[in-house]
Image (cartoon, rainbow, N blue to C red; front, side, top):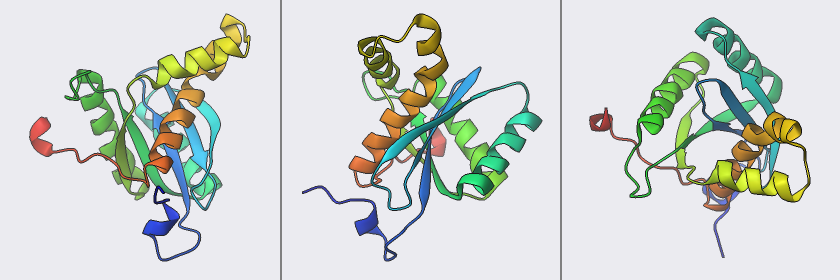
Length: 160
């Protein structure tokens, strides 16, 4: 049986995790329940500038009581960091410094494809799929992270 995230903590309610599907234009956000058992799609943040991003994430932490972030890494098929994955790590470091909330990283290969397939099967129009894709991808990423027992990926500074 898989170890849940709750099993890794002494508290019965370890807190809410926000899954982040990083993008240079849009960032998908999903959140867990406080027991870290279920992931829910939350929103898509459209980026304009660093100050607006900072305001959004500070408010997200406060409003949703976020105790941890997990940022998806779009790795190469080989498992090596892609250029986008490196950008996601830089973003994750910025996010952690900005909010004071710990950041973990998780392999997000195929989450957008899986989200697109899911939305196609649900017969959403192209416009509605676009409106939901990033937050559903974040939900898929967060679900996988939670099911793994919240075991993220180490990111070495020598990768940069």
